[in-house]
Amino acid sequence: MTTQTTTQTTVDPAQVEELMGRLLNDLAATAGLQMTHIGIKTGLWKAMAGGGWLTPAEVATRSGVAQPYAREWLKHQTASGYVDHDPQSERFALPPAAAAVLADDVQSGIVGGFASMLSAMATDNAMVEEAFRSGGGVGWHQRSAQHWQGMDLATRAEVVPALASQWIPALDGVADKLRAGASVADIGCGYGAALIGIGQAYPSSRCIGFDYHDASIAQARKAAATAGVADHVMFEVADAVAYPGARYDLVLFVDTFHDLGDPLAALRHTRQALADDGTVLLVEFAAADRLEDNLNPMGRLLYASSALVCTANALSQGATDPLGTAPGPARLTELAREAGFTRISRVDVEAPFNLLLELRP
Image 1 (spheres, rainbow, N blue to C red):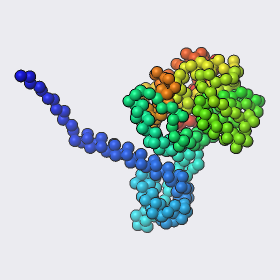
Image 2 (cartoon, one colour):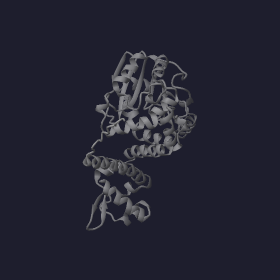
Image 3 (cartoon, rainbow, N blue to C red):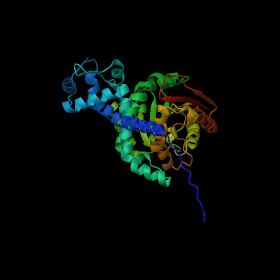
Image 4 (cartoon, rainbow, N blue to C red):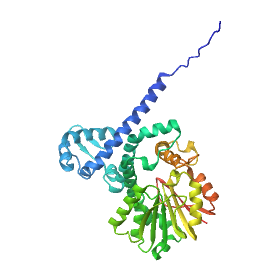
């Protein structure tokens, strides 16, 4: 007769309660982001900005939102700590700091862009769930249009204002080249907002964006025509490891490098396509090299985005060891050196969400 000994693990009820509390916070934050986004899209935040203490009826009138929805939205934002509430008068007010973020077109564009992408992730999760099991990928072309649009919105809000005014001027001699007339390539250009911004700021330069996603390229061409820069800002369907052209003065990877199936091959191709005195601007999300240094809200967002979007996209392109959304500066520097770049430096600009590296031969 065999006797089995069962070991029971005693679980501390207080630890269970604390864990459930954290899960509840996550659930509330997920729902809250959608409420915040609705406030942006319907003009609720702008309606409150500078308005002082307002009743739900007044907020509804100022925003054009139906009163029952405005009332519940105000209650939610009060519970979230974004709106102040006076219980005696039953009025609500938007603090100046909240107005500076949520009623501002640039700041709210970043929030709105990421909110759109997160909503799209929920729609696309059936594909991702299957990929988790199979080890396969989910390509950018398989995502919903809402995801593509959300990325474009975030790019327009975060990247476009800084790229021509701050980031490029911080690169050694690059702004002067662009003013005189240079050749620029953007790898993984998406809807083209970043490159169109460069084309508007430096009209003497010839700019070309590459992306494997034909629907994005079609949209980028329309955007360039609308912006009146199609004569010198063009877009083509091409892969990051084989895009055409040579002697580029500036090559951009704007939050796309980690999504590639073979980022090292892409950098090696770029090294060959670059002019002898050319520059690569590699823009990635701000992350530390070690996991233990990314245990914060930004790290949570990046690792979730990595598993749900970026790693899935890299695997769809044949990656065997994807970089992930948070590779860190050490890994990026290592790849740049392996690709043949000898001068690698961190660009000293204010970019809270991004890490910028300047690569030269």
